[in-house]
Image (cartoon, rainbow over all chains, first blue to last red; front, side):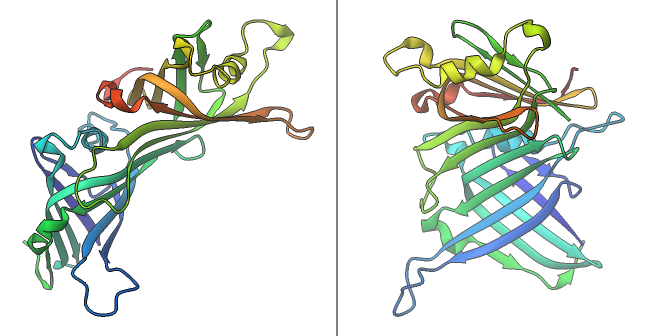
Amino acid sequence: MSYRVNIEGAESFEIAKECVKNVKFITDIPEDSNARTKDVGTTMIITGRILTAVDGDVFDSTRKMALWSTVPAESADCYRKVTVEHVAAGIMERKYCFPNAFIIDYHEDFGVGDGTGTFTLTIKQKKDKLNMVTVEGGYPAA
Amino acid sequence: MGFRMKITGGAEEASFSEKSITNVSFDSASAPNSNARATDFGLGVKVWGKMLYKLGGEGADSTLELAKWSQVPSEKADCYRKAEITVVSAGQVVRQFVLPNAFVVAYSEEVDDESGVGTFYIQMRQKKDENDQVNIEGGFSGQ
């Protein structure tokens, strides 16, 4: 079981499957709604490791997420296309796609007790573009 | 994995080595209920470490400079300082955060009669209108 996270924008990069540990997909619905709400949002929280490249491996792409988190709202580049694929035993179990994702929060944590850092990326799809979000799955992975 | 921190722009430079810093956390945060990318987002770094006193009183105690910085009133120019935090692992600089106009959001230090050394915690944030000056480097060799 592994996750592949692709981020496409002015600069496209992939977060290696060795890095991604956990993906949480949330549909935000107001809990006090009396009937089906119009106010639906969607959030994805991705956590993982910040690895140090050894033996001439390519450098870890997690830094590009940190740079994305500093892009101001005035720049078109603050919205990027995020695709998360979850493959298990040759089957594409889930494929989430947020074509207009923006960053809510980004954290990096480092400690002396563990050899790698961790990141937490919280993104949302631009709310007026909610109908562009796709959730697929259940077919053989290419 | 080791961490270094250097604070410049005050009366004295405060620098910390991998011997004293235990945890580093970088935060880029905006309002959680935002419908689209927020203009109002904050960039900051939190650092936890040990207060190591120099044996024989030699050299400067850098935590003292942090405690003084946290007390500088906002009228003074040196309440904003340049903070540079480096994460080094296996001969590589994994991250180098530079906040050129950092101010102190939280500072605490505590000592007890058991552990022998005290601990400090500092939270710094870049002046919000200067967010575009923050520099995040990494992925190059260095020790």
